Length: 394
Image 1 (cartoon, helix red, strand yellow):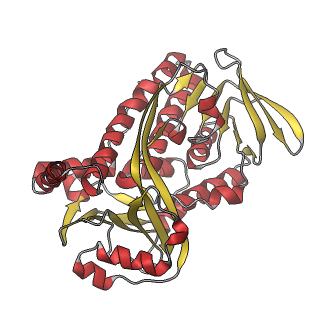
Image 2 (cartoon, one colour):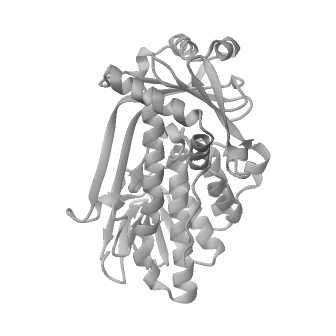
Image 3 (tube, one colour):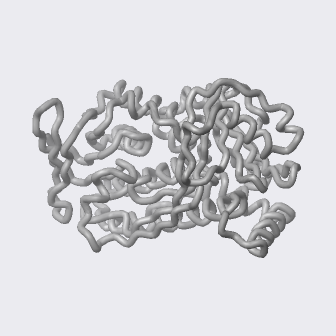
């Protein structure tokens, strides 16, 4: 087999890149080690930046999002039993975010790829990348008991933190930056109405809490727990009681509880590799970077990588601008590090760190109060939350 762009990973970043390339007339093949059902079963993010919403519209997969997604013009910070409203739309000159689950984005992209007869191989194994530093890279893989070879011009590694793409880069090429946090998020999904019309990020002496949603009838709640905690030790009743204790009294009284559809604990880490490319292999999304979920940047950063890769490849194939390939890492990393900073800042401000002494805790509290109490500070929070602009590819 031969294609122009081989995409490893059928998560939202791989599917979105494939959809955009197909619409631009650039041939691509997607390889995925899991089943479509497994990919759709992942419970992930649900807050889309303005830039990602616009990119999904450009990809032509926005119809259901426009109908079912919830446009949010702001969010709430719960501090010391009070709510502080961050008015995104006013502070950013009209930008908003869209609450629409990653699972739904993935489903829309899968359906679009099927409708467009895009070639995808699910349940692949023994995937290996070859000749990455040459102009003729190729991939070998097993599918349905047969060995296959896929020749291509470029490889997009969209296969996540544990995928084969980053591991295919020789040792010593990449520099890794990482911070592992001493806590995780215990999340619960339930068919209950949201406690508030907007997201609530709560700072509390017992730990952080987040009130999020997937729709007007399905909610996603989180509470900070130690990294050593086990999900089986948390009954639904214990979770609801803990969440209620971390919310302002008025919101706690409005909380509607119900049986969980899913419970899990997500560890928190910050991670970046430099560079994000090696020869004709390019890393996108979690294969190259991870952020704590506090700032809702993970999926959105993957989308900005897709945007950069797509714009470059269009110019390569239409204008012969192969010189732009060398700029991929540089362009992506400028935005990634700013998003890492915002996610690190939000995490530092809102979570309880066991190792912090009294002085550090008071400094963090004062830092957040300063930002919230300043028009410039609120604007900084808002412009980062809705997402920094994508960089033009020239």
